[in-house]
Image 1 (tube, rainbow, N blue to C red):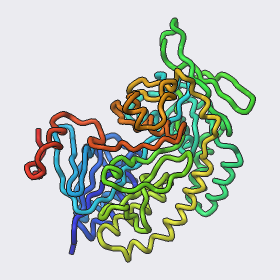
Image 2: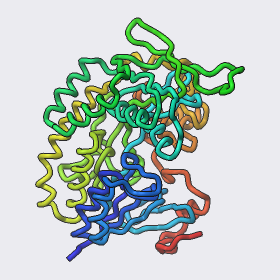
Image 3: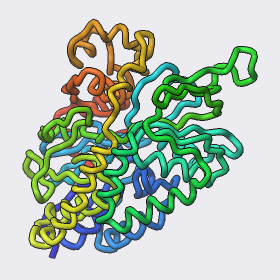
Image 4: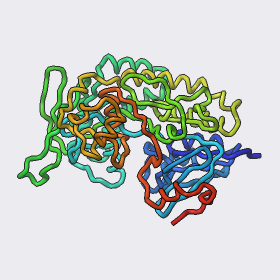
Length: 437
């Protein structure tokens, strides 16, 4: 017999694992912005990948309900305000599992806003959705194992990988390799990626200093033409059509912060994450968090955290306890990953005063030097006031000056005026679960 209801936000690995674990014991609703389960890692257009289906099918057969194409605009202790393509919906909740995943982390350098410069995952997503990249030169740069995965995928789609530049040193990466000895699956993944990338230059302690634009007479005037690379005292120019750049991931903590969930102790140079106990319970009662929102740790850790959170939210703590040791072993690897991806302080010197930091509002670095906090820069300099609501530039200013992002408020995503009107309406009148057109 099922008792209680569990609403799960995010249908990536952590959210799907939570749904599969909770569905036999509770009434489960799983929602996501994408049209089908899978999240960013198991993206499949409007369909569902095999990996996602293996988790979703048992949950569906156990009675879990799916709400696709919905994003959370606002939330309180009783209900979520959702928006889809046609309208808005107020959805009451009893217990929440937050598994919103993470976004790519960008660091600025001259030319990082040029057409042709994308996040490594962003370029992957474009290709998966139909971008033809065959025969085009791609430079992959930044930090972390996602660079290898992106490069291998792009090469499989016909791209010419000009090189992979990893800002971490060989010594840092050796520590990660040592930590991976406890995980045969991770060793298998890494060796498989390097096999796929045989012949591609892989340079450690190397990074992009600047991106150059095509000359005005060129047919692709204004597009990326080349990148300038630095490795130690050596500097050189590498022509390319695309730059896939990414410096790891930053957890999507905005909704959790809106609901009052406390942050984990800050680590210098790392994005903020949400604090949880052994059973993934956040500081607010009846809210569990799983996956990248609790810290970047990879697929296996997300699956384990999702399973524990789903079982705990469904009242099955005894079953959840069985997975704690496996989860803690994966957390050990996550800590090694964080050490290996520790960013070189030299990267702070790349952007000049004219380099744009807030892309939405065109705020350059030079203007931000006038301020002393994220709040001051936002109120006086409009940094973070654009469509992304500071998701990109707050990570950057946190890295540059250790500013703390402290301005989460509804709406947590851009929304239509009709949705905002519903948010402001009387709670009793807005309690209907029908879509308001």
